Picture 1 (cartoon, rainbow, N blue to C red):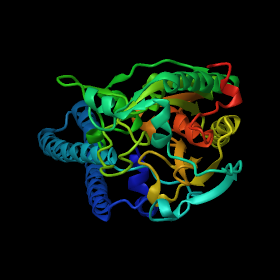
Picture 2 (spheres, one colour):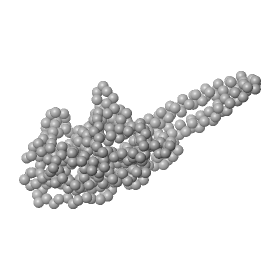
Picture 3 (cartoon, helix red, strand yellow):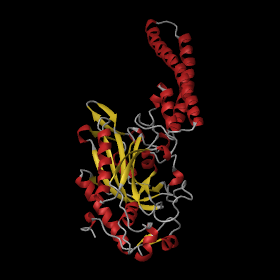
Picture 4 (tube, helix red, strand yellow):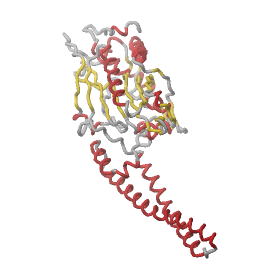
Length: 414
């Protein structure tokens, strides 16, 4: 959530930054109107409160001196009614502004490039050179015809479209990838946590999925509980409404979880194969830092995810997301896109984001800095989407006879 005081005190700067993120002008106008009205009512309230305090002191003096206090008493009573009336208006406006702030996205960092959508994202660098095949590489669903690895039809039978069943060596490869990713992250100083896959409304409010994105979530009928869209949600909220010690930061965590998303806005996209599923596995990186640490930790997380891909021998590239493609809670994001030779293109496999104090303000995660409590910065990153990594291995390590080789680092796992 954005700082309400910042919205009130420097609204034009806030608006300018939010426009970079392509925030709807109607929403900005509502925010402006509400902010100005609140400022106006506060300006009316403050002199009335000052007058009430001054006359209350006179009331005591008059009483001691034996003066007639009836007129002063009447003035105090009338002024008290005015203060109460305007105070109620101020409280109502504050509540409305706070509710509106919950659906306003985070401001982009100054380093984020301008742009309308994903076509304006900026490539930072490429890592590893894609393999040159002496045959035409296939997409993962065509490779699978001989191998009997992914059963899409039975996934639909068990659930609905965008579900699948992994079989035989694919099921083993997924398990190997999860273990390897967690071990890799632990070797880089991220401590492992295992968290619930079902969380309450407050938890999803803390990381910004609610109230704006409720339609994308799977809700438990009859309860205020939801299936998690990513492990970022419960891991970040481990420290919700807590005050941490400065010397304990940064907190660096990694977690495996299944993830559940309705993909409400992706109708017609990636309907074939395993690229976009309602349920998928992911290993996540989450860090909680001081504001001074967050940029260095962001680079550390990005390096960790990129070197994980490199260790698997998977060519990929780094993309800085432009303002128009930046997620709701992110102030800055770098995507890692893996090369899929069957599709002859790069596809997203990881996003590393710094939300700065946006989630911390919502979740009330603070740290003690001398005698002052300050908001932490929270960061998250995929390390990696397991299903997409499996697909990338299938396509990059495919052989002409339909078999699939295994990256060297995974051989001890399967």
